[in-house]
Image (cartoon, rainbow, N blue to C red; front, side, top):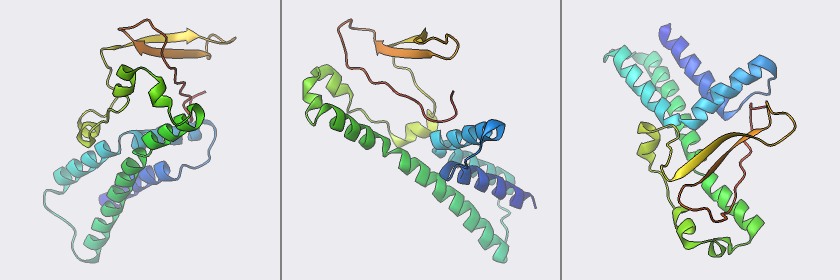
Length: 181
């Protein structure tokens, strides 16, 4: 019975990330936060599931049709988490396409070479597992909570800029969609 509850919780958690329901109020915020967690660190969740299964089962796996259902359920949950990670890798090409559409196909040639060279850096898949949360670069300065509108409580932004230059640089504005208000 404990396996059924655990599998159901994980399946609902992952399904909420793949197909978020349209909820409002407190339920909508909780759904958003749970979906955000799985979408941001799916590989970490795969490791957590694998380790917790290894510890809890200690080699005692269900047999027969129950064993098949058990393996199939965990396989589907794992495949969904792999899909979430794979889907996340499409963000870079989407951003590149949007920049090319807005700035023209030669936008990289129009910026300084030292900036263009840093745009081609990629993270490795293993860093998504071992270093899943935002890592701060030492050459980037963060200026927090600048007021930009009439409501000083809600109209705030952070600026990230190079510590090594005061020259004008390209600006990217990121508006985070979701449960933030």
